[in-house]
Image 1 (cartoon, rainbow, N blue to C red):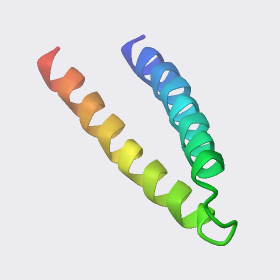
Image 2: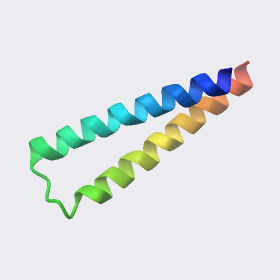
Image 3: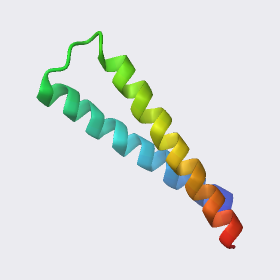
Image 4: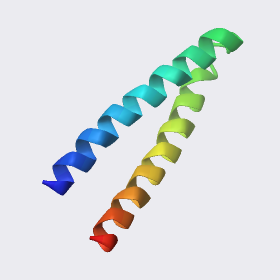
Length: 61
């Protein structure tokens, strides 16, 4: 049950972060060529953050 909750939260959180990244790219008028690199960097960093959150929850419980 905990794993399902963490996965559901992670998907929702990653979706929200990608929406904010899109808004940033639109507002700052970042060129189309640079946007994939920005998305990749943000997604990798958020995935690391979510994985460490999962490990913290598992070891605390």
